[in-house]
Image 1 (tube, one colour):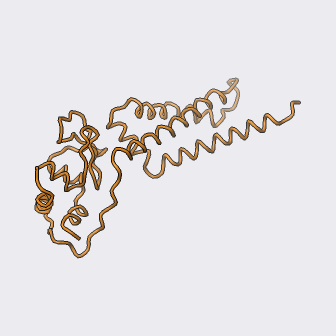
Image 2 (cartoon, rainbow, N blue to C red):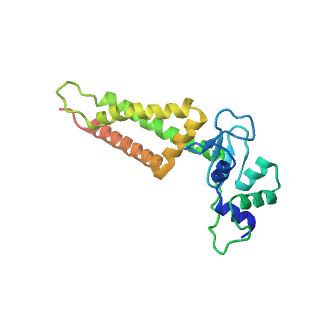
Image 3 (cartoon, rainbow, N blue to C red):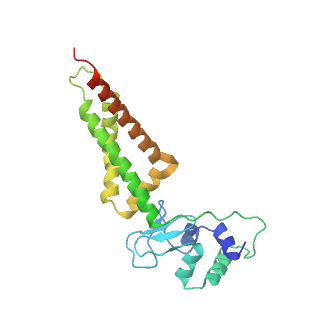
Length: 209
């Protein structure tokens, strides 16, 4: 394992950024030091950084290289010294994680989340009208109750992805992509739509009495 691999396996970009004075919020966003950034536009992950404002990107060594105007080797030596690492390869070290795509991956995830949210939103809007009780004495349909409970929240999330600032959108996408939440929502909506279609087809084929 080279000195570069040793550094990247031991120090995350976020750790380095915080060590060198950047204030990183809980969503992993910070004001970019590479351009005049008034609102956090620099996304810091374990393995890489990407600025949505100026396009700066790379791994932890690239970050320090750019921040202090050093060569890659000088940046690696500085990181090793500042974090108390032996620049020689350790006897056992974790393999570096595979790199993720940058802005393209975020845009794809954001679009995936937006489509799933709007599909669910349209379903809830339909349920709130279709299954509303006709009289005060009618029992409440579960779909009507779900629509009443979830409509405002789902509309709020969709609005953030439509008109929210970058930090808000990144936070929503990160949360929805965790633990398969968005995949579950897509499957749930597809299943409910299929149930609705089946119910409508069955009613249309029943003879009128």
